[in-house]
Image 1 (cartoon, one colour):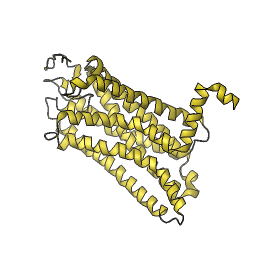
Image 2 (cartoon, rainbow, N blue to C red):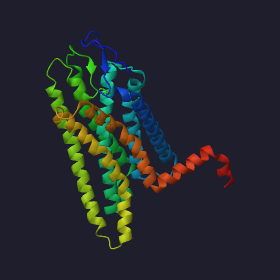
Image 3 (tube, rainbow, N blue to C red):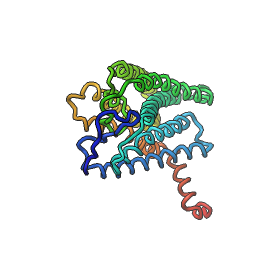
Image 4 (tube, helix red, strand yellow):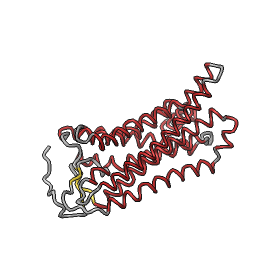
Length: 324
């Protein structure tokens, strides 16, 4: 595949060109097919979870409310980057306007900030359900759940708005080619003529504070959960309590491990780790969790699995459901 020749000076300051994954040009068609498949699974899986939870009156517990919000955030996060990635890899359409670039950046980073907050909320939900089961519905009322969700969203907006403002007001007068598949903050900041260090430090410090505090509280919740679980006399009760946390632990691993690796490789390993590895890691971090989250919850959560199967059977085999 021939690479288009771009003018590396900022003749049109209203446009950026996304390079894609450097060195992977021969695999672009395969990447486009893989991303399209994963995106379709992410959309279908997360929309199914949202529809099932909203339609079923028996799935109105706090755990399902947070799961519904998580599915919506996953749709936003994947939709912010994957369609443009597929366009780059399939048709070579690399151009993105200045405003679209920073809008994409805003939604990507805001969605990741919301997701880490939701994982904390879900850990708190499991703590209350296991350690204070008699007070579960009294503690996690609808108003409390709504307040938690609004607080998480406001926190993400407060974090992202100054960062977007600082970066969008930097002068871009040299190259307009972003060495990435989407408008990732560090990749765009390096194109600025002025020193991007203030915005880069802001991003690193505040993302570390947000993720670090969330992980600390999640760890504290699970420490209390494990203490309560191993205090149970029945092995069966212990296993049942732990199994309710299995999906959440799997989703956390999918989110935090590649996320932290992507952030700190971009900061600390940029001279040691090849650029294509950094870009590929950042891309997978945004598409793998939205793709696998609904699968994990669908397989491990019996209520979600049964209601989803019932909905699909009703939609595709209505005669069978009427006959039964």
